[in-house]
Image 1 (cartoon, rainbow, N blue to C red):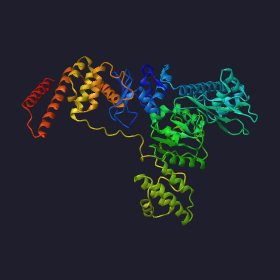
Image 2 (cartoon, helix red, strand yellow):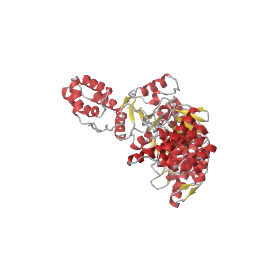
Image 3 (cartoon, one colour):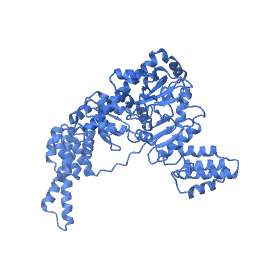
Image 4 (tube, rainbow, N blue to C red):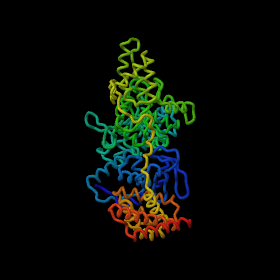
Amino acid sequence: MARFSQTSIERVKEASDIVEIVSAYTDLRRAGQRFTGLCPFHDERSPSFSVNAQEKLYHCFGCGVGGDVIKFVEEKEGLAFAEAVEALAERYGVEVEREQVDPREEEARKRRARLGELLERTAAFYAHFLWDAEEARKAREYLASRGLGEEVLREFGVGYAPSAWDTVLKRGQSAGYTLAELDAAGLLVKNKRGNPYDRFRSRIVFPVRDARGRAQGFGARAMSADQKPKYLNSAEGELYRKKRTLYGIERARPAIAKQGRAVVVEGYTDVLAAHQAGIGETVAVMGTAITPEQVQILASHTDEVVLALDADRAGREAMLRAQRVAAGKRVRLRVAAMKAGEDPADTLAGKGPGSDAADAFRALIEAADELRVFHVRMLLEDADLTSPAGRDRALDEIVPVLSSMPDSITREELEREVASRLEADPGLVARRVSTQAPSPAPRSGVGGGDPGPEGSERRAAPAPRQLSARERREQSLLEMAIALPSDGREILARLTSAHLSSRLMERAREWLANHLVEPMEGLPRDDEELRDVITRLVMGAEREPASRQAMELNLLWLEKEMVDGEIATAAEGGGDPSPDLQRRRADLAERIAHFEASK
């Protein structure tokens, strides 16, 4: 299996701008030599998140998360370590070296990279053709009629595929790509005789990219009514998988992080219109079906997803399917109340940020209902409420949905709403719900699942374990040793394992004794425990007021804790502590009092 050389990893870290990367997820402000802001990993009101731009480190003093720039990309973008290194290397133009290369894996990697380059070349050609070719004039007029401006179209790389049968085929071959590569990239189809020709012709083309901005394929819209199908996607292949694709995710990621939610729409133009209107957290599923893979991608970026799909029957069914595929994932699903027959592209046509239409659409998103509330109201809307039998059937379908909701004011109010619409006694509805076993799969066959805790938006910070006074002194002493390495080196030489309360702090002391000037350099990548504690100490060193006197005082306290422990052990054994231990304890207490009095 291919691995990056340690030298390459260090070059990537050195080239990376951690402030720029973190700023895509939370606003940072300079505070002396560091940057602070609200933690992008948990919900908080007072900033406890700190970034060290020089060391490329981050740490939250509220929830405890921390690491280097590579780990941040791993966590926020849902990437494996090697993928995070590769993403940063691409972003900052660093060439990386690989060790222990598996020839087959390396060949597959190079093949994927070559196909990606082919798709990028083709996307650039389509984009230029849209703006430069007379043949694409009607496409430009159509896009303008949908209210889409040139800026957003260029930003997303929207293009046009010419009508000729072999334009991309010939261009690709001229650039040195084989027919097999053009086919694997999803750019060709074959006629009945087996002869290849361009897959996309006379169509508006939308490049589809992954979260890292790498081209995966294309979606294309027909320009005439007799051109079938209306929408045509790249063929499923090595790079393109529709079920794991979200159109616009590469552009939406920063806004999703800052808004704390993603807005999901159906089509390409819906995304373009939303971004043009300043609603940058919008992505599309490119159809009406949302898949578990798409939910997983969204869950790696946010805890809340607002579905703004078309208000027709297909759109409503799709939203209920989303409830099922989200089962078990900590994502809160909500539904924006779209007007029947109107999609976001219609609502926002030609409107920019701050327009009435943009404000109205954002208001719909803010007021979105929790998905199960939407489900109940949809069942009521579709029910036959003109007869007792019809109302009974509606109640039978609604009760499992209500019972799957936590006991809350929302559920109580919804029960009253159901009773009113069904002309039933509220007590009857409440009794039916209370006796119904909670079920993740309502009888409608398309709903179900638990989309997550009611009302949860971003995960709360876990209650950190309270450190004992001794542990706080240990941590403070090691932080000050880092802050003042000239004095810290001598202090560490006097600090023994007997002074420390855990093996982890012993390991931290051992590491710092040999790496005090550059504590992060050379840390073993596979020793997560040591990396975490050293990161925490390095970040804490920026905040801990350090002085030789304070280090000496902390060391005295730890010495006294050690002697107290030896005295307690002697007492537990039924003996009396030695006079030497008693004298040491008294001497330490006197020296501590002297130090504290001289502060």
